[in-house]
Image (cartoon, rainbow, N blue to C red; front, top):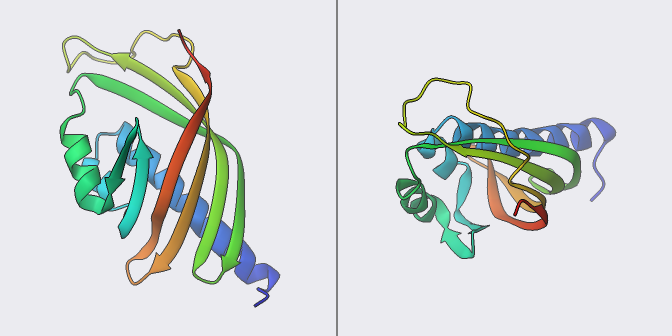
Length: 145
């Protein structure tokens, strides 16, 4: 099935927006927003674990340190529309992290070099409640020592 240029653009933009919303939710500590970014059968390969669906993501987010501050920067995004309801995406993910003490210390946090630059790959699907992540995995290409 061949998509029109307009349909292809719409699918690619919606998929990219779903990924951006995931990282924005994580950085703002909206962990419910992180969980609902994933399809019911979605899998997030994160820190050596496979988080299955929104419930698995919620459980992992409950363990996240309250004092952690992060910013995830997406670049070099390539999105391919598979069809009207599926997309594949590849992007670089640069992660800045600081653990603040106390947890409610006001910004700005001290800045260091990024924690990591990873190559990330995602599969996304459009469902009744919008675009959701079916699979997300990242592999570090650079890591701070």
